[in-house]
Image 1 (cartoon, rainbow, N blue to C red):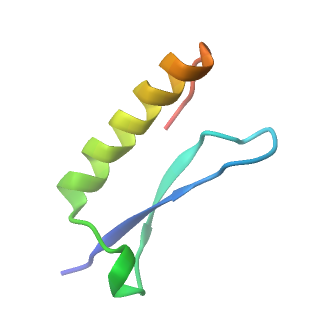
Image 2 (image 1 turned 120 degrees about the horizontal axis):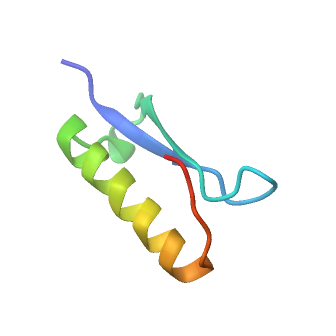
Length: 56
């Protein structure tokens, strides 16, 4: 069973973009279901804060 992590780009033209990745560092691991929910949450939060559309 693989554990997933989320990588968030914070600078440049891709800022706000998130993507799932396989976590090798146990401190960054989240379950796949949580990673999907977090990705949706981050997308919605960034859209509200920045008043721009983001694609996750």
